[in-house]
Length: 227
Ligand code: SF4
Image (cartoon, rainbow, N blue to C red; front, side, top):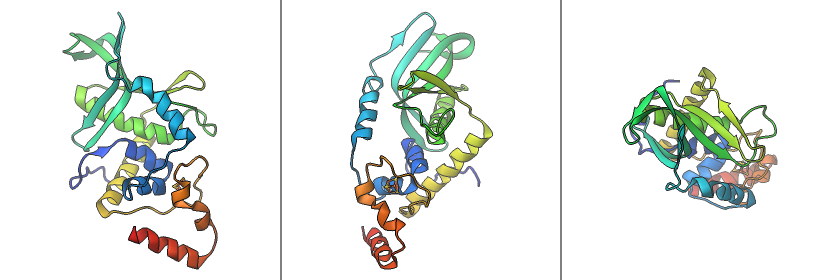
């Protein structure tokens, strides 16, 4: 699949990519149908981000400067978003940042409430979102930023490998999001979708789709087309 940009669309929020990878249907309900419902898991995530969402909270030490809630963009792929924390480590080999009058190595930090139980290091949903952040920061500053996940439950940093597998997955999801937005499509529920904890379950009604009931299925599908 080519890595073409979205010429016909406005800038795409980076969180779209993570949401789409988690569940394309949930992404479609939120972004095409403008549906939303919160639940306790969403609220916990919001609380965790409260501290890092304070853009005025900048820590500056001899070795490191950390900015929070940093707006980022990539003009080539028309991506826009906000990163939890941008860590600038002073280094003679780094990139010069005029507002601090020094050279730095860059690291993007994303805070997550819990490490996914079914993976050894990190989920690809999280990694894809962070790869998009890296594309933005690298374009803005001409650097090669590290990408690091911080899991609050285990209080541990895990470095995400920006390898070819992640690059390919990012652009696959990016193209699918661009296609769905361009054509106003809500993707169907995937057969192996894990719906545990989804705040939109009452809107999506995933169990109705699980039953082999053609009339109910047809009505639900027609309803989606109308709404
Ligand atoms: S209930 Fe399941 S299929 Fe429906 S939006 Fe949520 S995660 Fe996706």
